[in-house]
Image 1 (cartoon, rainbow, N blue to C red):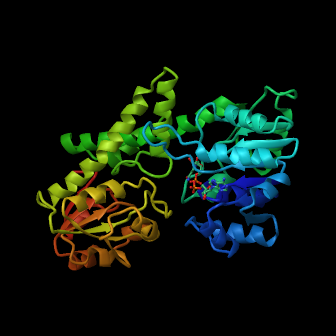
Image 2 (image 1 turned 60 degrees about the horizontal axis):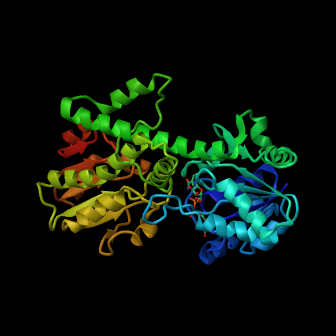
Image 3 (image 1 turned 90 degrees about the vertical axis):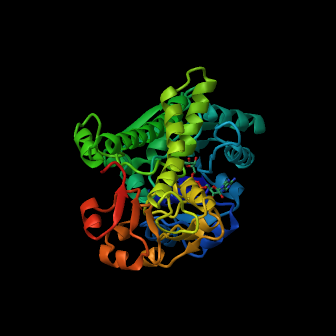
Length: 441
Ligand code: NAD
């Protein structure tokens, strides 16, 4: 199978490398000259554990190539996957489909008869049909199929998620003369190794596949937001959110995952996908009140977290030094998109805090998104040095192992706001800290 992958970002690069590992020939098309130069140079432009090994192995065998020439990649392909970004459109919360439709037009101009065009990006219901319409309008002579194949990988565990997924969702347009038979065959072939390990492959229609992705992300975002509210309640009435989450999660109908209380969800998917789903639902006349509430509660939580840090610092943070551990939206990634650290640190900065931060992978992208006078440190202890208060924003494993005594000696003050619950309250209090965490008194 010959595959063209449009977009070499987190999803395109991982999916492309894994499809090559599955045995397909994959041409990744990336338009960002810096990313492309890195890839051609044998460097991975993002931080994703295990990705470099799988990329270099498949580049060596010749199954994986990189370029910026979409026409050549598409012209030789049986299937083309669109894996470009779908950020929030300014103003109304909808997904911005500019990149998807621009790629579709280019694909149409280069396509050969029989091409299968697959949206892997997260796209609103109706996008697959619009892709088909654009293909037809641009090339009335062309015979083609469209499919939807939303991606569920998690950054930080992307290779494992792609190679051993909980499920693969494939939406097929069955309105053509062969009722989607050829498209189904190609998709089954591309995912053959997944079939062999008996991971479920759900084959459905375009709209259902598109909606499934948003529904899944919104549900997870809601789960996180729910446990955050329960953590707030624990703080008021007494209770330990870890035990509440464990007690709830052991019920198999609920499940343990995504029940970690924290500063509110962020990242490249949940915020934009929950916003997009509320816009889709509103436009369709079936507003989703639960998802709307999730978006609002999560949004407000970030400023509440900042206020809480200020309160712990004695009511004013003006001129005080805040040490920050972690910037990325979660550990094991360098992705800073909509990370909780952005609104929280901007709020503290505006309130007059002097911020010194350390993150193992996120400092370079953070520099472009945070106020310019933040100091970036070379390790956690440096970030803690002379700090009046220390704030934990991302639960990188390396932070868990820090010796509390050394931390205490490095800091000027003794306040810690652990917004990820990485340390035990007893240990930290015994070490002399004024320690606060989420949902644990
Ligand atoms: P990204 O920004 O990391 O990657 C998109 C890439 O596409 C960029 O490198 C951009 O330069 C490139 N691009 C845009 N237009 C192009 C064109 N015409 N030709 C060639 N390259 C082009 O985004 P991402 O995180 O990989 O997300 C892509 C999609 O996958 C989004 O819809 C997202 O919601 C979805 N998704 C992301 C994740 C995740 O964890 N990041 C998980 C599941 C689904």
